[in-house]
Length: 140
Picture (cartoon, rainbow, N blue to C red):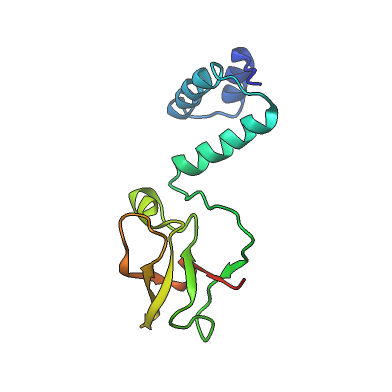
């Protein structure tokens, strides 16, 4: 890998009736892909996964021995709980600022969870407001 057959790619794009812009963009990305050297297929798959996440402003979340669950309104969250913003909660620049950030709940008001960051990333978030749908709570 990477092994790309240009004729096959073009026939796939044509057969699926992919728009010209999408097709041209895909071909440009494949041109770079063909120049890369990977030690194995797993590394190539990992690179694709990381690329897709970064290209769509999703946070790369370090996997530790932690358990996170979707935050829910009600009695689930309390002041002082450890939370993080879901890795794909927001698109674009907003996602680059907020996705994957960790912090503590400092208040819950009018359906918003207010967080102070604890992850030492910049910018420091003090008083950032989130809906429950954008958050996960650490339970272990």
